[in-house]
Image 1: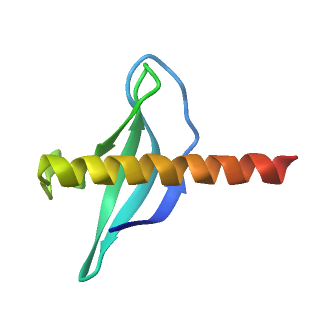
Image 2: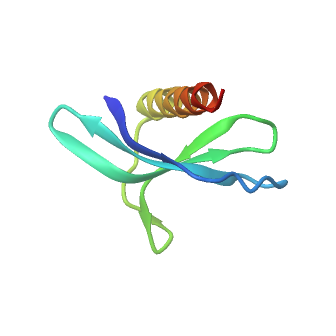
Amino acid sequence: MQIVDLCPLHDPGGSTARTVAHFAVSFPSMKLSGFRLRARPNGTFIVAPPAIHGQRMANFDADLFRQINVAAEAAYQQRLDAHDRAQR
């Protein structure tokens, strides 16, 4: 499993969970698009799976969901770190 097509968004801040990036998850035999990485007010992140009209398009067992969450947060942080280095 790999996080691909990560697109960071401007973080508007605020006191509710907010979307800070869109991304896709690539598996050996398929790619799922439409994931959102959401920043929580306490500083943690949570992945929102693909949805259409408020209905989830994919569900994952707890272990795979944790793996996706950890990988997405790491990819997002790497992208931010690379951006910060480029700004210096």
